[in-house]
Length: 229
Image (cartoon, rainbow, N blue to C red):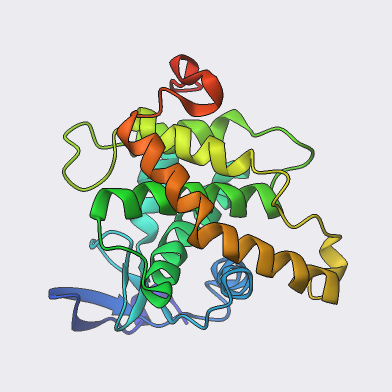
């Protein structure tokens, strides 16, 4: 369907008038693939729609709204290349899925801890599926730093967001070490349960610590947290 024929609708989602459209199996193939993977990894069946000029956000009663313009903005701010956009998309979707997981698991309602926790969990998701070896790419650090909130009104500051993402990607002992062709195996589900237990307990505590220290005690080298580019 040509872009001019895409049917946009308006609905009140999380108290805001939101312009949206449904996913298109041809236009949104990459988004659908990444979204399916996040649903399986988190053990969720969350709904996803495409929003316009609304930002990307999660709504417990509805699902997740993905704004491609915001992904493009993050990509630009972080200086990502076209080949690195999939990581930015995966991070954004995993961050919002973490919020859905928080709601389902009835984790505390402290807003800033929830944001830090979602960054940490998204970092582990990125590390599980999109990173080769035991290192984290600089462009993910750049993306996390670029979307930090210096005013600390809606999200933690850049240093904290970067520290949480790096901490998540560094949770190698808890990551699901799997062959991509066997990621629905019994072994996967055993590790999946371990990861989910960690998300609810250990990682929540880690997020609180990183939030309160503004990332400065991350792995004992918080002073090195800065934009990678």
